[in-house]
Image 1 (cartoon, rainbow, N blue to C red):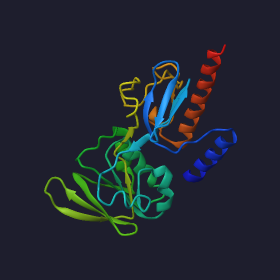
Image 2 (cartoon, rainbow, N blue to C red):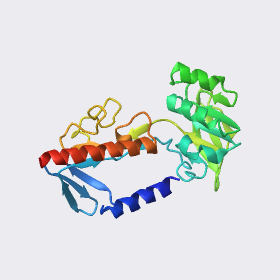
Image 3 (tube, rainbow, N blue to C red):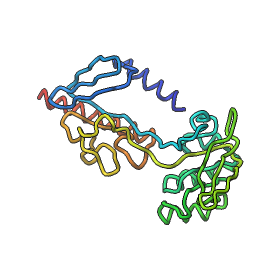
Image 4 (cartoon, helix red, strand yellow):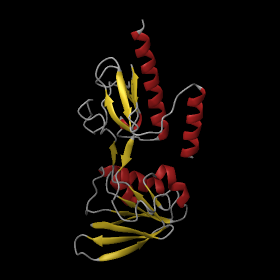
Length: 252
């Protein structure tokens, strides 16, 4: 599981002498040969090289019960949590490629998958949309917004509103997967680093080098496509090697 993996990473890093600070970063100074990172306590750390791995944030619906039932039936990751909904009726919110991918993946476990979309056509590519529409476990609710998630200790359904005639209804499901996109966490570097058209930090080819010498980036903050733990870990390895080579060249 994710928390266990993170704990193993932390222990391994500590064995190699890494100092870990559990604080929010409030300011980055990336100019010059020496970079600085300021955290919420006001303490500042200086370094010749920085790796940015701020990740991305799943977009939320902004509903009253969405956060409360997170981990109790509401999820943003089918590959992470799909197994826990074996033989259950679940819903996927969204109409893009990521929503179709989530829905198709969830058919491996779920009894049924209902895709709820605000429009009457999908934003997804034709091939992804056709695959989802052809799957016997997947059905669609069109022109419909999710008003709230229903449930006490766990999800029991969705409150829906038809955007054409205004009628309200409830959909009985035990799982809700929100798939309306991701936003890379680049707030601290906007205006400082070059960003890609997708909003991620731009890097040089397959490397982790950003538009500023000595600043590297890895993980979901540079990856608009895959966003998996294993791809982020590989990206982190690339960044570590790039930093090693960069520092070695400084002392050559």
